[in-house]
Amino acid sequence: MAKIQTFELDRWSEPDENHRVKHIGMADAKETFDKLKTHLEMKGLLPDEYFSFSGKYEGLTGELPEFEEALCIPNFGSSEGIYLDISLACRDSDGKRYFQSFATGKTLGETADDYFRMFRIAAECSLMLNGRGFSYERNNVDIVLTEKEATAVTNSVELDLCGYLEPETEVLLSSALERFAGAPCTAIQTITCHGRDDYAVWNAEIPSDMFRSIVREAAEKVGTLEELMDSMDPTSGYEMRLLTQMKDGRFAFFTIPERMNALRDYETQDSSTRGDKEQIMAEIMAEIFTDWEPAEEPEDELDR
Image: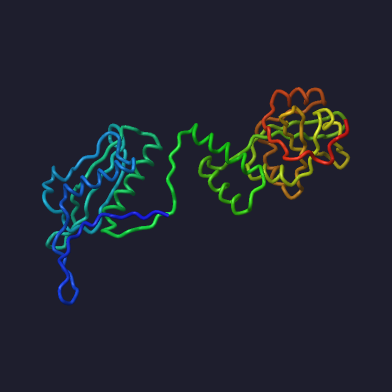
């Protein structure tokens, strides 16, 4: 947990004999801007093109006006880039609201990532200017990763999730994985036996949570690909198995629990091939996706 100390922008008198204070003014406008710019720079949040004190162009000198709120609004420019406009909502002597320009930032980037970053900068500015000297707790940590970095972290977390974890740890890692990869999916292969020498292989991506549930809870069989295919029994209609290849070249079968009927929802997606055993074996060897290896050798390994 971290504490964020916002800017104290109001000036107060010393307490009187009754411990009362009076509002006697505001902080200097340019000094406040310089303080904000330094704060953004230290946080790695300074807009990359510029961040300037726009109040000087509208006669903002000396103290800040007694503003009600600081409005920090990012938007796309009319010709290029993304701008951050900071203005102060004030009241004149007649009570009419007006807006005093304070600062302007700009990035030349125009992607969604650039847009989101400018909103993050806007949020930081808003907190520092509107917090009026209060301290706020923060429990979350910002992590900004490139696509390659996010992929590397995602792969690492997925490997951890394939092992045994305490339920609370699993929930935390799953939540982190979703933030890194959106709705995380895992590439899989399944084999279905429809009858004598009649097989189908299905290559697809299913939700990673579903994949982990299958490889943890299903009964395993390990052997050569041909042995596993020969062991399939379609007498009850047809039989589907999740297939993975182990590091030693052998394959593992995982039974898909009946309660996981949702897997059937993905059967029409991605690529599938139907044919005899020889055709399907060739297809599988050309399209192996997963390499998750069981932690222990199963007791029901097929006899060689």
